[in-house]
Image (cartoon, rainbow, N blue to C red; front, top):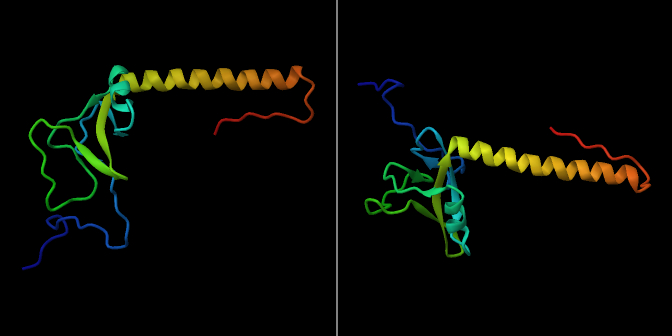
Length: 131
């Protein structure tokens, strides 16, 4: 009996490509990231609106035979060197607001660089482009 293409389970690639930090099972309306548990990075992001993901349907990386997690515990992954990375998320609209604020700061710095290059008698030309 032949198995149709639609019924076949998607197999992992054997060409060496792995997705060790891919976050699966993401809920729409949120932006997800893996945050290394170094210094106060996790708590700092919590203060900015991120939350630690505890959803049992969210997984990180390739499929594993055994990846036990207790119900309600944080989703985390070993990122090497004894460091754990926690899966965190933030609402889309808050993420977008943060990105706009970051870009405004960058625009101000670029404007200041351009203004300084005109007023300080620098030689040459300064060209700032955004790709």
